[in-house]
Length: 230
Image 1 (cartoon, rainbow, N blue to C red):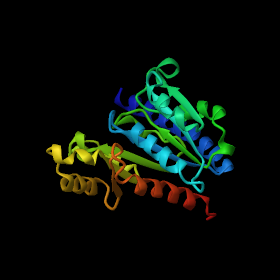
Image 2: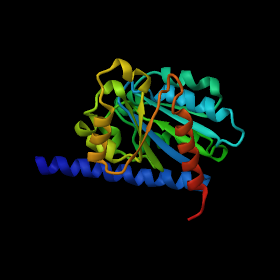
Image 3: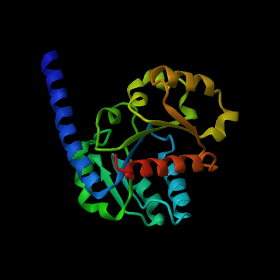
Image 4: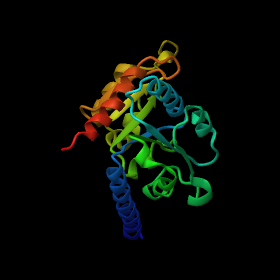
């Protein structure tokens, strides 16, 4: 029984990776850079996206952005982004996908016909809030970013190491709350280094805007590096 279960899991991941490669091929043909944005529920992904779109909107040289929003139900987060008039597609995992706690490659693929890839440069996928499942399923992205809130505690890299190991950047959000919390920032960074040596991190407050410029520079830099032929 144990061997059968492992086989089923392996087959599911292999099938997902096949579809992720198809997504990747479509993104490559359109020249689109794709960021998979992951976090626990309530870490501040959507507020950071609001700040990001507002900042990028201010510069005529910024990349054209599209967003895929992933939630189990509802469109509350997507509704917050409508005012920015960017291509926006909502994926709900409950009606068609059994209420999964993550986006997988097939779910993203179902959204692509509604996303004008030829008209954007940067696609940000806001994954379902979860610290386990999203780390296991590639969707065809270029980069993975983890948003970690200081309200979650400094032990999260040790408790959920795969999530932090599979990311290229960790954004430490809600730093405006540090004076009010018993949170050891140095210990969090040490724990992060222990599970993913050398990973880059940024300190951000999506609420106040602190650090958002550095985050946007990272995004634009990722797009620029992606656009340069190897």
